Length: 132
Picture 1 (cartoon, rainbow, N blue to C red):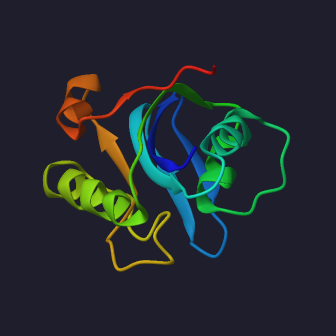
Picture 2: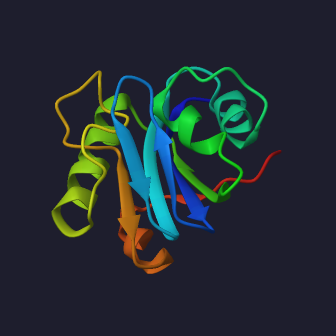
């Protein structure tokens, strides 16, 4: 299956993390939404994101390897890559972003947003991911 997804990430304690080629970033305690896509094998991509033992390749890998960051929910829908940027752009209009995070292959300001609560992303039309 291919599609786009939103990882809802809980950060239980404020932290600083070096994210790939980006500078060290301050992450405050709270809930974050990361918008991504997998145009091949969505299930495998999500399983990789949930794993703590992986080589850091994408920006999100650096964040999720930290013991204080945890994927608490995954939402998805079948859609092409352009939908990933559309949703990131929509979130970027109302939610604080982590500049340049997860968007080195597009022109978005970010693909990671600090959100108030789960209701913030209900307008995306995505459904909860359950492993089949």
